[in-house]
Length: 358
Image (cartoon, rainbow, N blue to C red; front, side):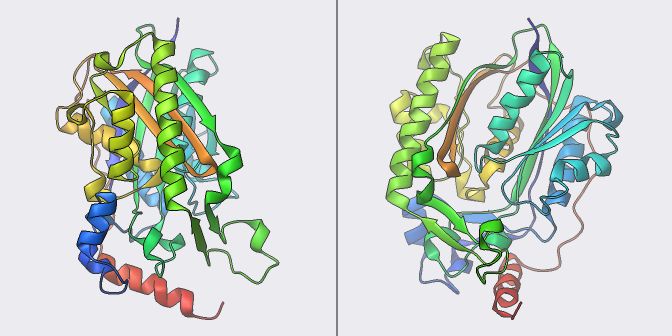
């Protein structure tokens, strides 16, 4: 049987850090209020477009796998915060990295987009459509944020990461998964102002308001992720004690703790970096995978569990087996251009731009 091993990985985090104290300069909030409710202490704000973050992460992932861009057969770009929707983000990335002619598609299931993309690319490798793929999770949330609403402004950040999948006969990569969606609850997490429904209603694209019902989201997220974990483990014929590390979507520390408890996995076997980056939507899991590798938390042959939820309300969990290599084969010289503004200055510029007449 053909499997799809993860052979390369790379992340790209913008350098500008927006702290809780920075948010308190223009929102009615405090560091204690944010940290006690979410576990988040800071997040990154990008000074470059989404495509630039994805480019750097992808170059690093390809170098780690020692795969030349011209050899890439498929790009799956997971995001809900496009620079462009027509043409798609994947085609721009294809052009930028030099992967001429490969299949290129975007996938949007909000925060689960990377993991849905991982399952999609894995299925295409298993079925022989392609022999390798570049799967990206990248988000530029800051321009679409309602920076006047503390209920959402404190939660999100920008970032990107990518992995390379390659066909193998060894049982590696995604061993089992469950993908699902509670569509009847889609209204509890909605960004008004991103889409054609608003074009003829006097609201400029990107002039957003967030419908975010926190308690209901918490309940649905914990239920969906816990159900997906149980189902994926069942399909893989594994028990929770056999999982070496849980790498969950980093939306909120309280959600992560609740899911770990229901999944019967102690927190010492759960990777958490939400305190540094906040919720980067589709980028959270691949960034966490990269950092878990850098920190020695993933070892050769490790069994991983990756639950997530997102707007829609989509949810999923994958059981992954890591391969024998936990260090990159090469490095990339791709870097972001220098940032000459603080995160707070970038956010204030966004606020000022939204106050100007269209």
